[in-house]
Length: 411
Ligand code: SF4
Image (cartoon, rainbow, N blue to C red; front, top):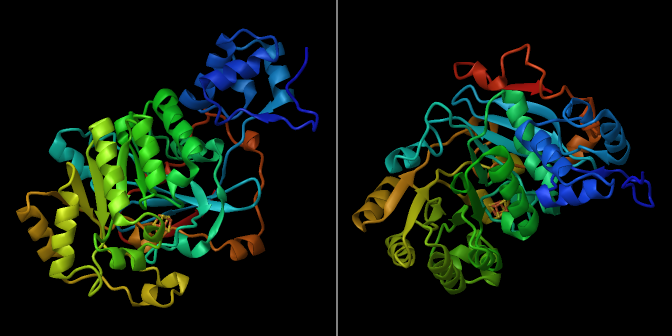
């Protein structure tokens, strides 16, 4: 029977394929489509890392699969646990030696209060993962460490989905919420991010409404989400509704001015009827003047929305220059929050989860030259324990909070 190795002899990576792709793949072996469904369940629902464990597939078929295909995503390198709040930052290596980070956010920090108010919460089971979508980012927002890396490449579907699978395996816990707020602008990697989101919903049982796509305001992507009637949550890093201020903080505003962003948001709301979230950090003397607040209120009122006020997290470890070096948190944040409340806007003030381990919003960055110096890690995923292996040490997550220093663990 023919295998699916191409002329190059390269095996096909099945991780990241959706049901239809897997069914089409197995058809090239002369297998019935249901085999594709079986593999789908093994990959995502059960987190299989090798064909050996797929025991409801005949041995001969598994052997052919092992010859023609691989299961490969990201390789865990280190995890760093915050003693302050239990946030855990994971560093993953990619097959080309680059690295990305993901952040596991404990309950009662970032997203709890919001869902508590709406009654849509599961305090005991909740586990939120902040997922990366690119290596670096081309948008260079002034306040963001990832932006200082420049853009290296988009992640594949396998690399996006495997962040969730790997963290689920390492923590031994189900991931309930996803935020695409890690490294990169998700809407610049639209097809792969949306395919990963669909697999998360269909294969990992993470409801679409618990998956948030956070954008710097890439209007083309927002319009596409509207056209596709995506049911995921949309969050927009706004920070200022004053054009010249937003240009300074977020250069993407030159390409997509605020008026276009606002039109796109209105269109999105008309198409989906989903409330958008605006994210705002207030910086001393930059976007915290009374006029800034007035313009923000006017902008936010155009569609039903929620405003997340996020504390500023220092990125001095990236040795910023210019405006980035002078950013300080506003002392007027509480006052501004009161004004937003008085304007009848829904406002949530977020905590600084993971700041002590540089895992908070805007702090993700990988020093690639240093990592390269230390040596790229290119382990084959299949050498990792299967999904049936139990952790003989407590999951990192279970080590919880407490006094002490952040602990980096080599995985
Ligand atoms: S905030 Fe988001 S869009 Fe802006 S540079 Fe950072 S990762 Fe890119």
